[in-house]
Image (cartoon, rainbow, N blue to C red; front, side, top):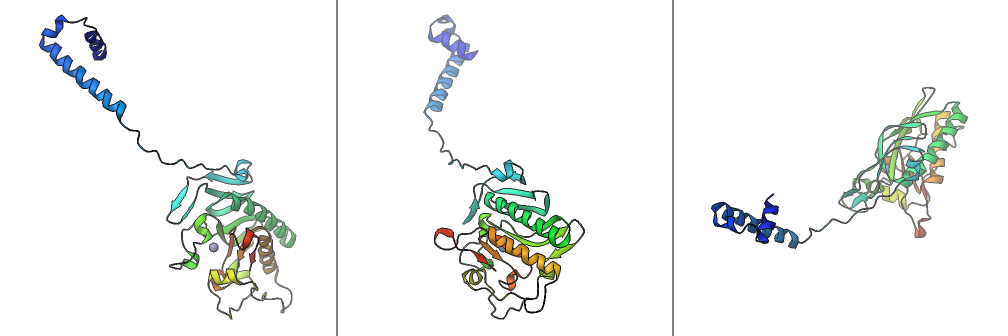
Length: 260
Ligand SMILES: [Zn+2]
């Protein structure tokens, strides 16, 4: 309404009204309005933050894994542009949602499928649930104050502590892996990662392994074909109760694998 009035005023259509106090008041209003518009037009655009493009994950899109895409993570030196929160791998539930990247989700799907086949072959039961521990965690290897960031800090690692089968069997890495003697005290993730030999496999000179131990050994071996780093009880005492699985890069061309 005021703008219409101002337009008329500029055309001189209401010349007579300008003798009144009302006109003065409206005139001031026009001046203020025009000035505000000028400032608004001339104000520089505020800087826009760089857009982060997130990538879709085929395993999530086609239902091989269930979960959702999370917002990008950026925390100190850690982070991931397209993190996922995964709750199920195929028909197998995880005991808690895990935050991992798409490549890990793909590899886990293939590994869980192999674990399920092993359970069926060795114990005539399908895999029901996988007990998970740490997934994303911004820390350095072995929680050290310095050194390289762990693959956990890039959503590129997951720790597995056990399995539950449909027939009610519950296995843990801690209780059912064959006994291991830690003679060389190689306790660091980095030392384990740099070791090319690994420790001697326990239990091989004491007759056949119990079925549950065979199962765990088989799941570890299957993991070694799919992940670039697999650290279990035979790596060091820090991994006595879990398998650490990651897709970190080792060696030139990222072609070297660590399987312990
Ligand atoms: Zn780990």
